[in-house]
Amino acid sequence: AQSVAQPEDQVNVAEGNPLTVKCTYSVSGNPYLFWYVQYPNRGLQFLLKYITGDNLVKGSYGFEAEFNKSQTSFHLKKPSALVSDSALYFCAVRAYNNNDMRFGAGTRLTVKP
Amino acid sequence: ETGVTQTPRHLVMGMTNKKSLKCEQHLGHNAMYWYKQSAKKPLELMFVYNFKEQTENNSVPSRFSPECPNSSHLFLHLHTLQPEDSALYLCASSSGTSVNEQFFGPGTRLTVL
Image (cartoon, rainbow over all chains, first blue to last red; front, side):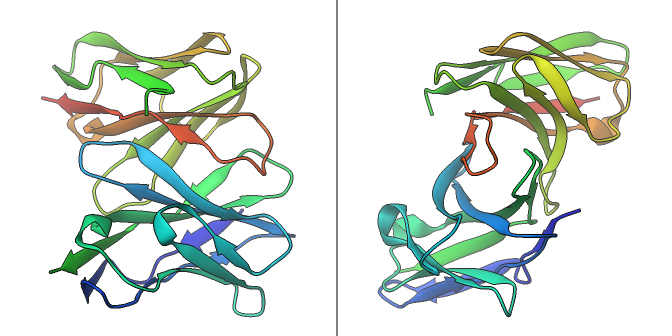
């Protein structure tokens, strides 16, 4: 079965600095990879996904993620962090032939002014 | 988030109570999901419905009983729950293929006394 690991429970960055939230995955066959964000008292919101093609995927709110097949990673990045980016971020993976999406435990991003 | 609604937003129940959670999606999707979110743990997929048919049951205890009368509505019936069942219960929907992202509701915060 597919799985996702988010090695950092917490990431702290200063506003204006670049941010990276890490994700590694395990799946049989080609992966479909997703990033979601969760703000307090809200459900998860979709940010971006990798299905096929270009390894660098651009998504909402200036976020992007890089798919690295050899390292089985899909790290989330943003060149310049905003205080409003502070939230809980989830990486998820799906195998190509089923609806079973597996999520990581989440990484709490805090951007300080 | 108005695409997927959940009621109630908060629920407190005793271990002998029977209650139901409701989810409705207005996106024309054909797949719906129940997830359990506990602090510092990955989201746990509970049930998957595709075109009203249950396609996934991830070893969920029988005290949780799902119902999907049509592609727009999903219920989770709760009976004789345990305190460890206290969590945020999230509903999601998608267009049903593995390449498509899921859209989440805001969740029901359940407390079992």
